[in-house]
Length: 495
Ligand SMILES: NC(=O)c1ccc[n+]([C@@H]2O[C@H](COP(=O)([O-])OP(=O)(O)OC[C@H]3O[C@@H](n4cnc5c(N)ncnc54)[C@H](OP(=O)(O)O)[C@@H]3O)[C@@H](O)[C@H]2O)c1
Image 1 (tube, rainbow, N blue to C red):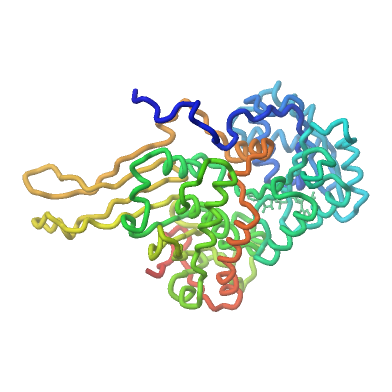
Image 2: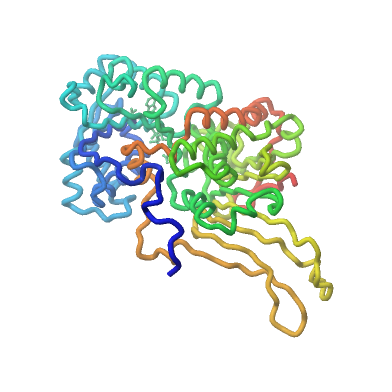
């Protein structure tokens, strides 16, 4: 084995990954606990963390919603969620441990007295339990975030960390954070009224995926790619997130969101930032977030020319017949945007972001397409016509892995070239290692206060600023809406 490049003694700052003080007491408070996400993702994630003994010794889960529900009915729902969606099978001992720690509180978010009920349930009596961490998870529709934050703030359930007046509290916002730039600015302002930025966790579960985290590892743990990771060697980059399912009965939600708010504004722009950012000074959360934000700041705004020539929007045929969808809906289910990052590394290089529903194949991937060879030396057999550029493909899901297309000699007496793939398959290489679900990783990070995988205030604002002309273009009808056959490869997009 080669000698390691640096020894542990050389590591000064690796982002606080080592030596984190162990957390002994924590309470998770989940708002919107009667909803789909709590049953499908949050409770199974907490259950898996419990099985893996990664939760604090003394943890509690207080589930909160407006509905009048019995604890038993909530527990039955959560149990079925674990049975159906957890990666670890339901084990009676572990489940009993969860049951002993789960409670349910009915809260009317508009009534301040309701927060007092919650306060009593949480048993917040200072200063005795100042060591207990409280993690408020807003798993409600985003329109309710403001009223809940206001209620939590006014009741003193959350206080700014710098006041050191209450127990350590953090708030997790499910995505989307706002529905446009104005609402995101307003929500940030309100959140900062009651909390410090270090207490705010804006969730984008895509960032918790192993393969998304691997983008930075791949770029910065390998010395051969970084020197050619720039405009001199790369001709363009494609980032694609296709789903093979439609809106699955969630018409009302999708009409509000559409593909721009649902995927492009958050997941795709965040993946773009990880691909395009400069090497951070360290893997410390703030250094990584600084570099991501710099990418967003350098995005060339979409002007009328770009909206006309670099954007394709479409709806799948049959969308208008889906339940909860307006008959004259202009909500796009497909978007493709060619954008530019105006900085030294990427000037002039197109990044094409495409996403859509109801397409032929489910896949999320990044393709780094390299410049062609400067001169073709193989003049026989039309080889020059057939030479294909190198493409590095990072597959986020499914078939997680990385492949590199290279040209190689086709066996035989002729001088012929064929493209072949060098392939790394995540699941094959790490067969023995169970992959943590994104929500497990992210919940643990919230608990430990590691904000690397969460967007900072200015990141969300820049992302909304970038998509604002798209949202306005849809609203005003300025961007024409195409259509495509469900289950197809999508519409014809602009070159
Ligand atoms: N489901 C997913 O896979 C997924 C993925 C990514 C992000 N998200 C985000 O995660 C959040 C929760 O998702 P979900 O699928 O669980 O949502 P959901 O089922 O539609 O709603 C969750 C709960 O919120 C409460 N609620 C509904 N309307 C409300 C309102 N106007 N004000 C306050 N509370 C209201 C309801 O509980 P009560 O009426 O009992 O209070 C409901 O059970 C949403 O912000 C969503 O955008 C979900």
